[in-house]
Image (cartoon, rainbow, N blue to C red; front, side):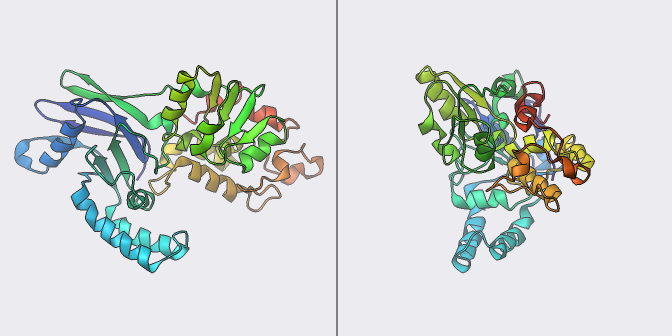
Length: 346
């Protein structure tokens, strides 16, 4: 299933209308703001006599702990059979079992006890489904975008959602201060080849412990939802000057500003039609896309060790067969404030 679709529930008393953009949407809100009521109405709509109307291009269901017991049981059996959860055999079996839940928009109330469990993370990862999760606490086991955190907005009978964070507030990039990256992989290697003051946090959850004054955090915005609140709170409490640069991902920047392939450009200009629910996060999609479209080239992309073609000046002898834009200042090309589209893909 694909994002950027509308969900609407209408009854005599209330009217809910949401635009669902990505696989995971997190909605926060105070008690009595209409979150649990929506879940109740979705369940009640199964009875035609209630005259509750639901409009959505996909099946809509409320996921409860009782219903999730079947998933818990089946995944526990797979865990016993496959000790390597990264093996293709394990992934194939998970996908085979969980495919029965595809093409569904799941709503999950705050009472759901499994939200931060390994099994629920596996369920999300291998199901071509979308999830709207009502939870005031960060979803630490799920890779969701900071742009997909919303608060419930109520006006009379009408309920809508609005973004909690303005994505344009996190678009600046400042190479004059120390840069903190999530890990020591390709983004760190790229920046470190141009800048002297770059450090790795060795994991996005550890960024908080690396923060001091006058820094720039460079991280994948498409999977930064679980960290954004604690980091912003820490910055405010300690009165720090920290710049957050949160593009979709480092791979997105490379695709957008260095790759010349027309097919890639068409995909980037229409992301919602190309990223289905089997991508756990958009960051994985961009990594796969970049790897695919450079696999047969000298500049083949590797997340663990970045190719020198992305950091060194262009090779004038191979321009005719290279799919990278020819620029001797690739650092400037990627991070110029006038070229990055404010770090956004839409």
